[in-house]
Length: 163
Image (cartoon, rainbow, N blue to C red):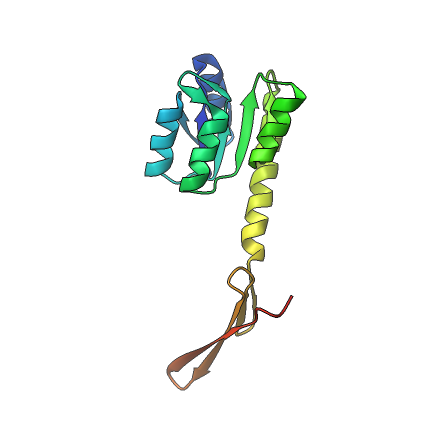
């Protein structure tokens, strides 16, 4: 099950998005303020965050920067701010996507699936396994698992010079 945090202060928009995404099999958690969003992030893990920019106690930009210090969560900004400077700011901060209101539900669903697909793909590409050898590109180490009559030994090698 995919867990999505929706930070949106407009109750009608929040309810509509929540209902639609739940009908598509997602689990949705909501927050209405920056403070509430930070608390939810500190206490839970999410697969994706949908984030409005104009919130009652601050901006989605500020919330996004704060959240990045806690954990990395793929993020899509959902906002009425459609000027180029706002869109560029969202992407410059590191957002995975930016959707301006109003938008169609099907488009939102497609963008969510796309961001999740890219995020999962990156995670899968960090480690590759070939028979008894496991290579982790993030830590730049390889592990060869050898089985010798009821005992397992693991040999770890650093391959930092390998591209």
